[in-house]
Amino acid sequence: MDIEAFDYHLPESLIAQTPLKNRDESRLLVLGKDSGDIEHRQFKNVIEYLNEGDTLVLNDTRVMPARLFGLKEDTGAKVEMLMLTQIEGNDWEVLLKPAKRIKVGNKLSFGDGKIVAECMEELDQGGRIMRLHYEGILQERLDELGEMPLPPYIKERLDDQERYQTVYAKESGSAAAPTAGLHFTDDLLQQIRDKGVNIAFVTLHVGLGTFRPVSVDNIDDHEMHSEYYQINQETADLLNATRAQGKRIISVGTTSTRTLETIMQSNESFVAQSGWTDIFIYPGFEYKAIDGLITNFHLPKSTLVMLVSAFSSRDYIINAYQKAVELEYRFFSFGDAMLII
Image (cartoon, rainbow, N blue to C red):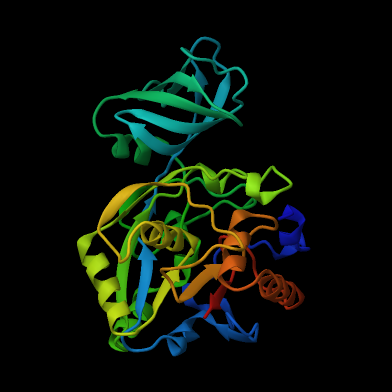
């Protein structure tokens, strides 16, 4: 399938640079999964589309302050490092800028040596495996030295770093936020619970795939990068009970979706499981886990547009995106939301 099939025109002015004052007052485009019908609401109205006994699945990953600015030890040249995924021990997959001159054996210093990163392996597209050397607890060093790794299309500085975290963020390890969840407030989640809707949590740490564009013309040739996920027994049991009762599973975000579908591709029911997933969901994929999806508006020709197209249809999704552009919805991480149901 040609990558151009997932393109659409997006004026740069519609890319949201800052979050709204109130998370749940973003706009919500409701798309009929099988009909293509469209409604325009506010995000707080999402509760009207949830029924007693349904289960809402949230990704509780927490974004690390994983962008570090430092110096190359031998030359003093400035360097930027974005930590993506912990490989093993103190070895991390990272993105470097500029990466061209960082070779195996080179060392980078951050915070006058509070963190020293040694290059162990060179990867494609600015990626490296770096071994970190530090004293104490890494999370404390990152809290001291690191910055929140906002996506490159956000040019504004974020005054409140917590606005790039969901209100339920818990498990530290992500290089980017699961942005569909940014619209929820504690009050809205409580209203959803009070309606009798179950809330379950999975974890997927967002990694390199979020920053890597599709660089092939035929999407069948695209390879996804692996990301770590986990689902516990409590969540698995709740999801199985939801199914047994004939109720719906509604996923919040593409990361929750990829986690649930990864599990159901190799199991007859939901199971407690952890590991690495490189699942690539695009039209032709048979969904087995979810009945509804809450998501943001994604970049043209991205794997995320392909994922939502597979859940509904490419024609319905592109039409909905074009309507959103006409009505000046806000796009991407701090933008508005879509409910496909």
